[in-house]
Length: 302
Image 1 (tube, rainbow, N blue to C red):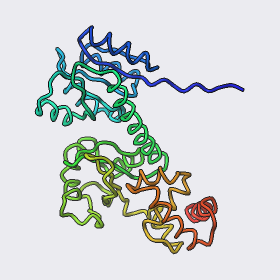
Image 2: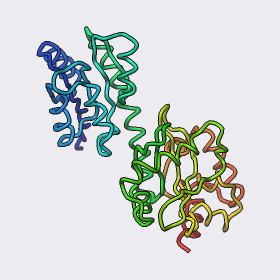
Image 3: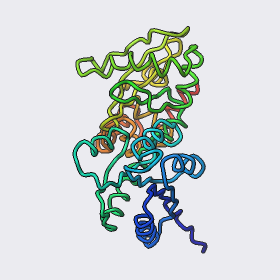
């Protein structure tokens, strides 16, 4: 019987110190990790664009382009923004630490670096990044008009369907970068009623934005609604005796997602998803998720 080998994690080290590079290369090699090396920020951007790493270990202080600016540019790239960046720095003052997080870093390690601590932190961030990416890929493949935004309303990512909807409404990249954040900040404001949708004031197509959940400390999931087209949830609720949340769970069940994946997408726990499923089974007079999915797909196809 053939054995499928697990793909090695790929780590990009960005540092101008030969001593640090040598130590990290030996540590990561012993941990079974594939290592890429860049000596400064511009080189790191080129490597990351051609060979997407799983995680980036970034020195804060480097010539030409420092780690903070390199991290900002990585996070501004739609194809690279999901990569966790861990800063390595001899600077332990609060200002530098905050600067690293503001640039998009997920963690920082002060030099001299301890190998075991580095590996442990790296594994945690790799796991979290993969779970988040898995949820995003699920959203992409499900044909949903979904976007995520920062607390200031800046667009972080969007499903292909959402970008297509913006394009159909005549809203270009400049509008998404300059005008959309202003309107999203209204929905993200603490006092705003999150159950209420907000109509977007632009374009040649009536669109609304609806708050879904906070998926990360600095990231919010939102849905763009085409008012000219009934949503999948609306179609399920029109045909079946389900609540809006039950309709959302049923939709993702029909798309083959697990309770854990649905919980991540909807910003709730797998246990809560299971409770919704129990109610769905009773209302639809079925005994398992497969039967429930068949009913949902039948109504969606009709």
